[in-house]
Image (cartoon, rainbow over all chains, first blue to last red; front, top):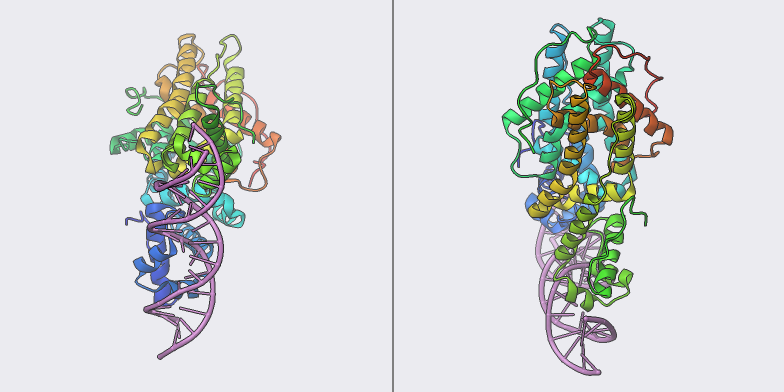
Length: 224
Length: 224
DNA sequence: GTCTATAAATTGATAGAC
DNA sequence: GTCTATCAATTTATAGAC
């Protein structure tokens, strides 16, 4: 099972517990929560069900541990963004990185499961929200604020709003289609087109130089 | 159970089948798919389980019928938009209408369930996608195209892209928080702020007058 | 078509030996 | 900690009477 750009964490837990958590991650990402039985997790991990219950008090606890670990992986994945390229190119890079991360199988699976089962775990939802969207928004907002300070983005909009708008524009149809599993999946060209279109729209709206943007739009949307 | 702006369809089916479908809709929207048993549906509908199986061959078939009916309801819900108000005010109204529709319990429930269980029903996903997002995008794109023709929106971007950007900006944090059930739920002020912020960002990006937009931004985002 | 009763399988979770 | 074996409850789905 491809887990995207994330790699497993080597926390100090017993090998059996590690195997159980890895097996749970694989199965939850492949089949969701409800469709995965504790029998299946134990078999996938190569341990007995009793051992599984020795490490995780319930299926809910196992799921909570899975989501929490995914969130920790996400937190370890933010990358530094330089301020020494033109703002439009920086938006293109940041947006492209973010969109490509969001459509990795691991990120999609977590999104899907949290959306599907999260209402049963209010505490977990709030933990996920703090570790995921809120953290990403803060990271983007910090970058925006610095660009504003450097005079490259208009400074009459709060950085957090600009950050959310940037992320929203980048998600576009590509993310929705991948998240839903709509066929056919978006191509690399679709991704690039989405990033380019969103970048131009964002710069037109937030660029400090106002209406000085040039360049015509491309052909009609390749998705539809 | 509030089903949002949608009302049930009066298709010609037997009363028991109608009761079964209505009960399934209520329970699926309240608890999702996996957490609802056929026993619960039969009890909620006031019929026996055998009768339920006489009308729907399986739980999957019942779920498919539920989603298909929801999609038909959605298709019957588009509304006309006038072109005789300033473009910024029109964006505010359309965006507000759209955002408020998207966070109704019915729309949220369908979104959540389709996201959660849709991968098991590829045909259903594609039908939902055509009835929901694609239709809404086409509706918005038609409005954008007319405004472009009237010279009120820049015409160097395909209407479908502009429409998707508008919808993306409007969703914002409000929709995500409602969809995930993050506490506390967004207030009416949060919704209005999101619509206002998105409207300004969209007009700055797509307004025909270029950089002539005035008005400073409001206080920091009320959601954190 | 509709019901009561039940089959057949799977589930989450546990007892008790080692 | 780890295992085998099992419990108790729930699930989807069906049999058979009316």
